[in-house]
Each structure stands twice: as C-alpha cells, then as structure tokens.
Image (tube, rainbow, N blue to C red; front, top):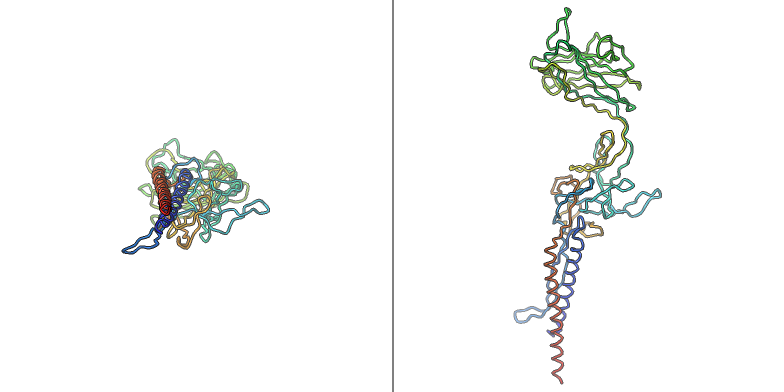
Length: 450
C-alpha cells in the first residue's frame, strides 16, 4: 500500500514542481514587461494518515503566491505621458468592448486596474497604455472644477484655444525716488488682448505731480494710460507720443516708498474707477475701459497693496523699472500636445503658451492587493478577498504619488528566478526518481512470486 502511496505522492510532487516551473517561466518571460507583477509558488501538504504510530505519504499541492504589492524599479521614459506609481495604488483603466457607429470606442462595464503606466495618446485622443487599456480619471470643467463622483476614460479634444480678452493686469514696478531732471515722464508698454484675440500695446506713463506754481509735490504721481488703438478717448497734446488717451489717476506713496493711496483724476477727460483702502494690506487697483474696435473692454490694473511692497513702489533710482506686468488675456492657440504633471493633472498645451487641465488622475487602493485577480495585459479585477476599490487622491491613505515621464518595471528578480528554477528542476528530478524507484520495488515484489 505504501509503495502505491509513494508513487501517488511523487506524482503530485511532479505536478507541483511543474506548476512552480510554469510560474517561473511566466515571470522570466515577463521580466521586461512594464508593470508586470511576479507570481511565486506556495506548496501545501495534504495528509493521508498521520498518527503517533503510523504515517502514510499524502500529496503536495502548488498554489500561486501573487506579489502585486511588491513595487518594481521606476525607470525614466522618453514618453512625456508615462506615469509610474510610487506607492500602493493602481491606475483605473477601461477595456474596449466594441465601437459606436461613428468609430468611437465603447467600454466594458467591468472595472480594471493596472500599474502599467506607459500611456500614449491614440488617434481618438484617449490615453492608452501598451496593453490597450484606457486610462480613467476625474473630469475637470472649463472653470477648473474636478468631478470626483466618477472616473471616466480620459479623452483630449484637439481643438483651438479660444481668445481671451485681457481683464486683469498685475503690475509690479518701481517709480524712481529721484527721477532724472531731463526725464520727468516715464513710460512702459504692456501687450493686452481684445475679445477677438488681437494684440494692442497699453502705454503706462508716470509723471510727478506739481502744484499751482509748478513745483513737484513729493511722493505724488499722475499715472496715465493710453493706446494708439483706443477709439473712445481724446488725443493728448502731451503724454506718451500723442497716443490716444484712456484715463489717468493720482497715486501717492508713503515716506518708506510703499503705496499710500490711489484716486481717480476728476479733471481727466475720460472717467476711470479706482479701488483703494486705507489700511495696510488693502488691495489697490485702477480700472480702465478702452475700446479697441470691439466694444468697451474693462481692464483692472492691480497696483499691489497699501503699505506693502508687493506691487508699485517708490524706491531709490532714476528710472521707471517694471519687474512684471502679468495679464490674463490670450491670443487664439492651436493644440500642440498633452502632458501629465506630478499632481495627476492631464494638461492640454497650446502654441499661445496657455494650458488647460482636462482631467485629474486618481489612484485606486485595496485592502489586500495581493488577492486581486490577474487579467490579460497586466490588468487586475477586484475579488472578495481583495476588498472593494477605494478611489483616492494622490499621496493619501497609502495610494502613493506619480513619477511623470517614468514607468514601473516588472518586479521580477531574474537572479532569484534562476535559483528557483534550479531548485524546481532538482525537485522534479527527485520526484521522478521516487517513481522509478517505487516501480523497481514493485517489480521486485512481483518477481518474488516466481
């Protein structure tokens, strides 16, 4: 009875080592597959009889040991859309189940998850990895609101960027405390955009205020705004090259060179509005209303804050110096491509220098990721043992962050697999030897009858 039992046990050993060999083969074949997760082998002993006085050989069973939570090495990629996860999260992806009558993909209702982040943009504008899986994300509205209620395949519409008229200018500059006697009027130009996206030069001119006798009033300036393209103002006899006048205001500075107050010049031919508090930190701005041929356009020019050096100042020097004059308008732009950022944003880029965030990539976590069910293309599906998917923002609850422009390599250790291969080979041979030896012993037993 024990001879037959030993043969049965050895056969189960052959099957178990064959299963281990299959797992090793799978691992080694995918050692260069992006996002692949290795499969180990666990061996379990099943008893036939085992007491204090008797033990009969049973069998051994091989079961897979999934290593989904073991991270692979992160390597830099030439793909700007590639993303590697540094942490325990997974990408949410969809698989195509068919096509619409217009040729767009239809997606399976089954939710899939992967660590394969070598995404590129396909011909329909979707982000797809090398396994053909579509990256899911939270949609972002034109106003920047992120819809976290559901994840959907990310598609980038390659449309033009519509022109944006300039509405705000943030001016950071210094008017000199001791302007040159031969240069009492100081000017600078800022490019602004009208509703059609055409560019116009807005001239800002500073002149020291004078009293009735023509004497300079300390720390007081008159700022004038003009543009050669303005159509609703009077042409000044003085000012910036006789450009068409838009409006002007009076600006006063404190003794320490910070902004003290801003007020509209009631004597100016064009009315403008100002906003200026009296307390330190109150914002100060001047609002002008030019017309560049497309109707009146409101532009608020921020001068910083009262009592702070975060906008317009009056410090030492002889020249008017502009540090920045950032404006929020834009010319029309053509789509040039998309890119990912470390915060998970998927951004459309345009040749006018503007970018638009169209989606946000979340990460999916599981209570036991090693219990996920493997699918084709380095994808996984959730199981009862893995727990349900939890959609997380980056760097929260162990989800991890993104390394943009990189991919996660397979977590297979070739040296370890070669060692296991040798062990499996020797174990397989040993079990085979048990079978041949048992067969010889049975033959000897049968020969005893002769």
